[in-house]
Length: 110
Image (tube, rainbow, N blue to C red; front, side):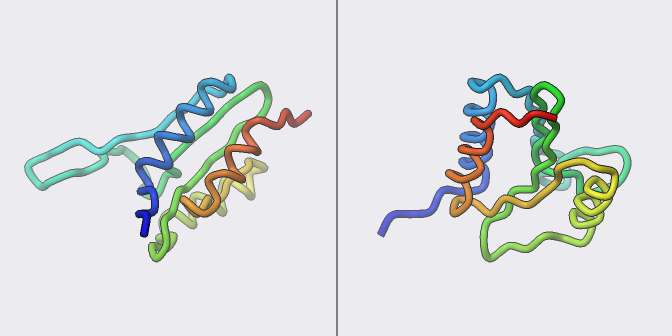
């Protein structure tokens, strides 16, 4: 039985592919503190894992690996970004990885 790719491995794959395809990428990474590994932020928790921008298109992506679930703070961000007209969604990895990578290749006209 082969092991499923981790969320981090899938994120690394998406970032590498996106850069090759001309997307600007933003992802935060945890840092070790006196209280363990944390992602230091200022503002509201739940910000999506990835922000990808190419041309006039911007994607906000929350990566999830089953059996994990979208946390309430994450859902607030996704809902609010979508209501503001942005493309914001959850990509379930590794199952949805190939489909999402294929979407990054497609040029959408805005």
